[in-house]
Length: 244
Length: 244
Image (cartoon, rainbow over all chains, first blue to last red; front, side, top):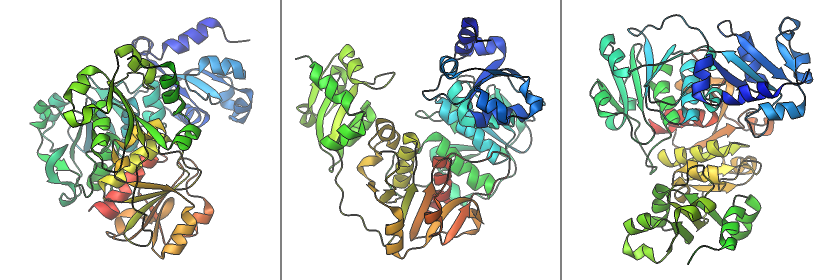
């Protein structure tokens, strides 16, 4: 049975946050990520449209949840320039209530680029950080570009939208705030508790949150670039403070 | 004098490597980067199209090189979804001949994503690495997305396209190759000479180059993400080996 116009319209509508929020779902594309998310116990697929070749490679237990489509249907459903075998709609992941008063947490203040945001969630997952708090004005992690950049980490990292200031103040944990003029990163030892706070790509951390920093952390520069990409800076800071 | 159709066509043609190579030029957009590149002594602007407001903010010495355009002309010239005040064409930067047998060098094997490539050049600039060698099958650093991701570092880092294997072999320097199964990064001390070798986003470093590694370097994982973004991994490795 060919896909209907209304199915295509529905998937396309999910490019908009308003419709994703109303439905509680998000879209993922590509064989690797969809296969990974299909295995995740805290995610439910609502619809999976795939080329027959890809469906044939899936475990028999999954196949009943998959809808076969052809190349031209895939092109209509996909938001990618180069559609890649499968487009899936998942319900948003469910996590146990996050804990804000122990361990290492990542707080993001106004990250605007969905690719950066997704990459940061992937980094949190790599470095074993269970919770990422995004200020309400941050990009939406269920934006298609953000989701693709998480590379499946969306199933393992709890991403919440809340005012970081309130959670930070209530937590009693130290705050390591990434700033251009601060204490050198490499002089700080490994940490096992605290907030790592990263600011907007061009404006940095807003002053009210800067005021909560117990450490203002700077990646020392050797050369001449004016700044680092926000996701790269997050990776460098997590590597030094948490990864070692 | 309004911009002509042929000027618009010329700028648009420069989205293609073939035309950039034939002309020896590349396109940059946005006030911050264009202003920075206009200051660079090793770059010559060929044409700068800007809104009158932006032109008014530039030093008088520069203004003769700038062409005023209106919003709708900017939209026709720009490749961005949100055009940003100025579109410029520059001749490719000129550098002294690179030195491949001392200091720290970055070698990239088949990086495909222009954004990753540009971010890596920006990272090299931050960490004081003068030369980046890209294998011939890598993305073009003068691709508009790559250029925007360099954030001006294209004027300060010499990017060459050559077989890394030959340069590495001839250099006699140690080779730190980023790989998923190797020696833990954090056990390696600071380096002041050698190649840092980064592979393709999905396939990694090809076997012939892996064979030249004196150190196979892995970023230890604490959590569950399957991999890291290539530019983020480069940042973490440079930070640890060079930045500290």
